[in-house]
Length: 171
Image (tube, rainbow, N blue to C red; front, side, top):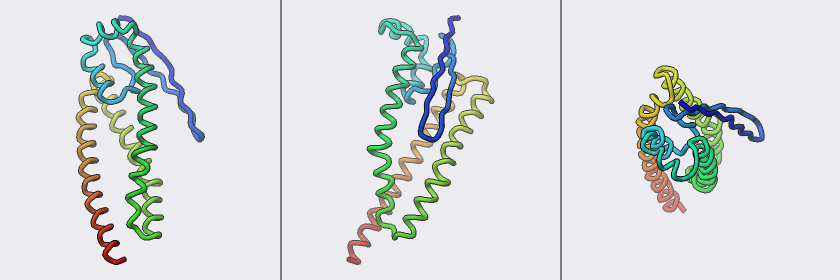
């Protein structure tokens, strides 16, 4: 069994973290893939090895390239789509509710979501033994979370439209 490992370092203005990920031809790939590609590479690893070889690359190099693309795409989507939409939710609120709502989301909501996701992932990895075994369960949990998120966004949209109509009638 051929094994390779790499160390990825990411830093922001406030923190620096180093993550080591090991890969092998029979084990899991690094967790930096976008979910669809990541899960596809894990679940169909043996079937994709000829394609990876035809591209003239190794699973490790593919992990680096897909990880870099994932970071660029996720940050651009966050700053161009998510942040403006998040701010739009506060438009119909009065100044006090706006301040309290933003504080609650920034101080409680964001860290709770990140730590909750980490807790779920770590519990599955430790409980099942490896990321490769935990991947189908993570995919199912991700699908449920995305479905709940879409439903919540639609409900928030209806509330937003009602609030804007009410504000338009008062003016």
